[in-house]
Image (cartoon, rainbow, N blue to C red; front, side, top):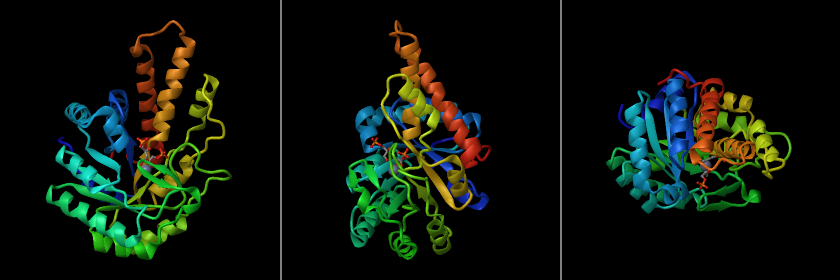
Length: 309
Ligand code: G3H
Ligand code: 13P
Ligand code: ZN
């Protein structure tokens, strides 16, 4: 199957009540780990690259590796720009074969966000590419987009309706209490499901996206810390809350931090247990397998996208 946009997978997700994982990619092992998991679970999957990932891996390399993953599999795979901060970044990705882009105008005023999103939508749609936009502000640090914790603002359901109507965006990222990175909650993890519900009532046909949705899997944090890491008190969104979101109208769930933790914890463990090892394949192989294990778990037990390819 060739690379696809997210249009059909989102239609199915809204009709059947499940979510699709959007996993951040940075190198070959991460791509292979994710795609192996999606194929094993016969699930649609979204691979997403941030501006930082594109700078690191280089866009041509990324696209060739993604092409290879498409040739080797039978599942729908979309390639998406995560947190595009400017029209030019979106255009570059569209021109290089991305099937979906995000324009993140959440740091701007409502009117400015509408304006920049419309401009991206116009160019993307002309080229058969779909657009994710963001309304409301997450706490934490987004690539090229800084929002301090005190500025975190939940998405306003009425504004969401107006925004989607005026911009023509294909999906909408909302703020209901998640944040990026490994430190999402100081106390109990809690999302504003009531806001999600009212947004879905206002825009029932618009796929909803949840950013900052890693679980910050405790076992992975523990392994990191056991083998020389120092990430105390990390906390994310538990599986049961993500499952509820998946069956309550969230169509795309973004995961980066859990993949970073999976990869790094396994490398730390392998190197620590094998001090004489220096062949990168020795530690990258289990790291890649750990990514597959974590992504399979999310697809099968949390998002509900297994066998929805
Ligand atoms: O939302 C941000 C993603 O986790 C990407 O992070 O910009 O460091 O690649 P990055
Ligand atoms: P996490 O940091 O929770 O993995 O969120 C990733 C994300 O939202 C990418 O856009
Ligand atoms: Zn994000």
